[in-house]
Image 1 (tube, rainbow, N blue to C red):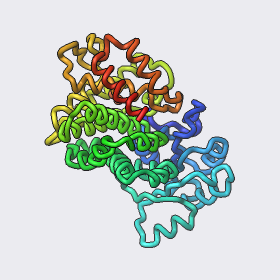
Image 2: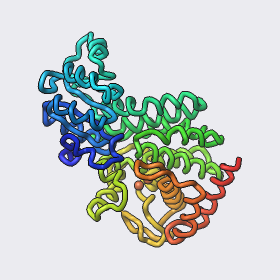
Image 3: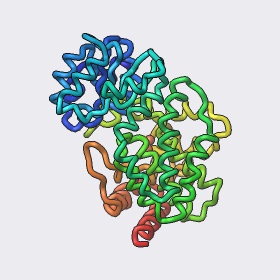
Length: 379
Ligand SMILES: [Fe+2]
Ligand SMILES: [Fe+2]
């Protein structure tokens, strides 16, 4: 996987639209470069450089969103590589993370003096790298969350933190704490009982982690749907947490496949579809996980006519939860903003789903979902 996720130099820029999602890593150690590529696999494309001079000359043509510089970066060490990067006007505004083994008292001060924005001490956890890159890339997006209502702000902060932290649990093959997931989703249950969920969703949309954005949108729409049809606290929590966790397995899928514009090749499609089984594997060892959460994760790509995956379940084999999840998942996917497509207006998405997916989706529930969303938008 690592080999696929690290690209030498500017080959990572082969697609024009990918520029914003490239993280550059300047590090003399092949194993470090590989580690970065693996850790960021589903989040960013990694352009790896083993030489600082080469990196500077290439990166000024195509600035990435973040640059990681190791203290030993050839040819003359991380501090001087950063000095060179900072002298280039094209790279002046690109955040830099300095990586080091040396946990000295003056480190924070030294890093600031060098011109870096953050540091990581080796060995670091996968989540620490993801959080550090994500905070720098999403600085302006997350700053806008300050203007949201307190519950919405809390909801986004807690869920993004949980989502980034789950990468460690997946890496270490440890069980997810359902208590932590519930705590992160508690503010969401308060938010969906008011119309403020719309401004919260507007706030999450610009976040660069598409899997998080999509999962938050699914969690929110599922909870809004559940609330509108009269479900209460325990059931709403299953919808919220199930929505947030339903695509977790995508964290193990390479960015190139996950964000590929256009049609996937058969083998890529197979990898993409494997996210359901991967998600179930991750959730399997989680104590106290409600069955409904497994149903949402395991059946959100099943279709009423049996043409869905992974099991090809049909008709009455799909309970109400699975039917709601597949409606909300399709709606969210159509109305999500992607690097390669603008979001589809909700009315258009609902129109397409009603006219063309009658064999896949539960028509009655879809009509109710449509009513819920349209009445919410006119409120
Ligand atoms: Fe999915
Ligand atoms: Fe999904």
